[in-house]
Structure formats: structure tokens, C-alpha cells
Length: 384
Image (cartoon, helix red, strand yellow):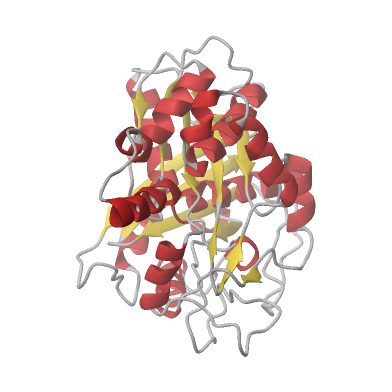
């Protein structure tokens, strides 16, 4: 990239907690935030009780917020934290925040009403459109810049970052808030991933229902989580930078079917290679992998990493064993983990893996995400 991009603010809400200290403390524990949920008959990773109270407090602030989906409220919560940390007060920034599922809780509720009574509430359309997240977020933060929403399944949040980088590099904007939000712990969504045979069952599981990055597992173990994460981006060096985005990569591979990814992760090979352009392989200290906990997803990404790095693979980690797969928000939550590791100079590994972390300085971390359809994104972060 011509000019590095400073990350000057980060905000999130997830099963880890609702503030930075709580989240970092949770990462240092070896226990998972995933639990069996009787009502859904599935393993899930929900917001903490304190996080849920914080969301309800936002809902009570404005009568209009009583009618919007939790995915929007999660975005508002995370966006407020990020913008406050960055010190943005003039509204002179753009927004690109996406979601994989969008307002699925409201949609399912409205559809049940339609089935029962053949009518829908007046607000059904505006409150379930994809642009609902960014538009309400822009309203809440009083943003005057461009306001964009998109859905690129599980790589949504990192595609938002790509878009923000493009706006900044082009000179069309000076500041951009990017991220993803997901509140899809609903019966229909759970039924969808169960139909694809991606989820673990209650019987026969270990202390870690999601065995993300365990390449020796015999079954799919993807668990759905919820949350939102936002990052404030600014062009060039900044005194308050938390970390820098110094390179980006992206690629899409040819589909065999709607949710396919090649056995050697061709899209990842291309996105990683693009991000690494001009960077020596030995400079990458760690990789925060997408690693969704599925047999094909984990092994194909690992194959791509080995194809690019050879036998000298950097330290590898993922957060999905702990907080589940948060779909459209997952890429930014992975990026947040990478930033925290760079700041704290501590590698957060996966507790059930034998590989030990190296006692070395963390300077550059690669972050991966991929969505259904082979839409891969790779980001290189550098320590501020």
C-alpha cells in the first residue's frame, strides 16, 4: 500500500465481554464461552449478561430503538466505543458496516406474523433491509460521510475494511469506520447450519464444543456466536494509533457449489500472497486464522498457509474455539485479537493444540477471513 492505515479506535461486544479489559482477561483464560442452549438445541456463544444489559440500555434510549434488530444495536454499541477511543467528534467520517445474516431476528418474527395472519407490521421492510445497520449507526454517531452496507457472508467485516482502505487511499475520505455485526442466534439460522451438518451435537463433546484448528477432528464442529466489532481507520501515521494496516490481499476462487472452497484453499493462497507482496515470509510472526471449526474449512486454510510459507509456518491461532463463529463480524473480531496481541506482546493460542507459542516479539500479524463462495481476505497488521 502507498500509505499505511492507522487503526485509531476499536470497539466490540461479544461473548468475551463488553469492554477492552474484560475481553483481554477472557482471552487469557483457557475456558470457552460456548455453552449448550436447550431452547435452540445447539451449542451457542451469546453475549455476557452485562453485555446484554448494555444492549437493552441502548434500546431504551430512543423509542425508535425499540423497533430495530439487535444486530443494529450491537453495531451502535461497538461503534460508539471505537469512535470515542479515536476521538472523532465532528462527524466527518464514512461508515461501512456489514452483516452476513442481517436483521434475522426481526425477519423471523415478522415472517411468523405473516404466516399466522397474512399481514406484516408497517415497519417490517425498513427494519429488515441490509442498509438498516449502517444507516442507524450513522444516525447515532451523527456521521456526515458516505454510509455503506454489504453482505459477503463470513468475510463481510474484512471486506468492509478493504473498502475503507480504498476510500482513504483514494483521498475521497479522511476517516472511515468499518466493521461487522451479527445477531443470528435464531431457530431458522441454527436449523440452516444444522441442515448442512456443520454443528457439533450435545453428546460426546469435550470441554471445547468447537474444535476450531484441530486438524485431527473427525466431525464438523462449527458453533455460532454473536457480536459486533468496529475499527476507526485514518490515513498515515498517527500518535494515537493502536496498530497499522500495512498491506491487504483478496481473492475469489471458482465455485464447485454454493459453499465450496478448494482443498488447498486457492483463494487463501492468492489473498495471502497479495498481502505479502514485498514482505519477507520470516517477518510474519503469527496468523489469526479464519478456521471456522469445519473439516474442510480448517484443513483448506492450513493447506494454503503451508503452500505459501512452506515448513516455516508462523504461530497460528483462532478465536472461534472460544466465541464461536460470528459470521459477518468474525473478521473484525479476529483483527481485534491481533491488535491486542501486538499491544500486549502476548500470543493467545488454542489451549487444546500441542503447538507451543514462541517467546518472541510480535511485530507483524496476518489476519484471514473467508466467506461462502470462496471470498478470501488477508490483512497484515504492524505494531504501532
